[in-house]
Length: 306
Image 1 (cartoon, one colour):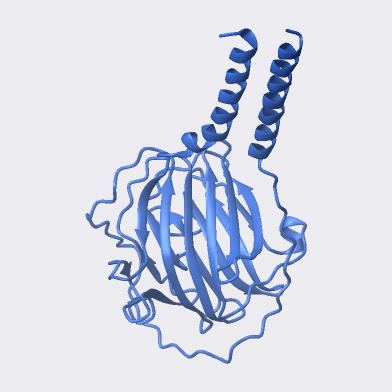
Image 2: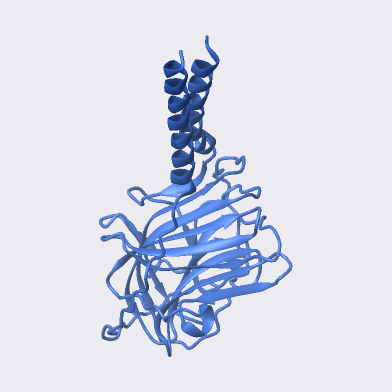
């Protein structure tokens, strides 16, 4: 084989490797720790079955959260041994009184958003309107929080809407301890808000997906009402499937809320521009392609000199 031909084959092989490499690197790295679409009973534990319950007809999980009641609902135990993970779910909020908050996240046995370790997403109603929050607490009790308000992250204040289904995704990078929340309109796919915060140390010792308001000492008789669907937790670390053993929680009260839902609140919607990040893969392909073109030119030049 002539040197020019060998060089051409080598460059073409490099193009194929550069294109296929990222795909091969990503394959087989994700492990599903927990997943439910609520088509069947998820067997979540709750201390308030009157408002937190599996909706068999809607194939979803309904919630009605009132501050200062300590109500909760959580998944069967999840064996998470550390590493990067992605938590995602769909949520539709039908009512959000001023001062009420919906919280869902990955947490430990305490299920208290003030106690670590946890990563909690929240939808609430404040003086800035209907806003989104990303909250985390490390095992050493260091809290970090960012919200979709100008005062918090420096961008324009972004409000969500009632009776709209949103897809929420939380990505934790174990190498950098960066936690990113992204909220998209489920129907249109349009990104509503995305931002990040940083854990002070690697997250571990979390064992359940939880919704509720343990540790919330807000006003009574205000409600966050709606339902969730399509909850999943995946990780890039080696993980053991969830076991059906029960984890008792004896510190939380059991109670029943008599719910009165006031008229729906009209929320303002302030979308932000979605920043599109150019994939590095396209640049790699372009460089490889130029190399291949150059190789072909060398072969043709060599043939002309014969």
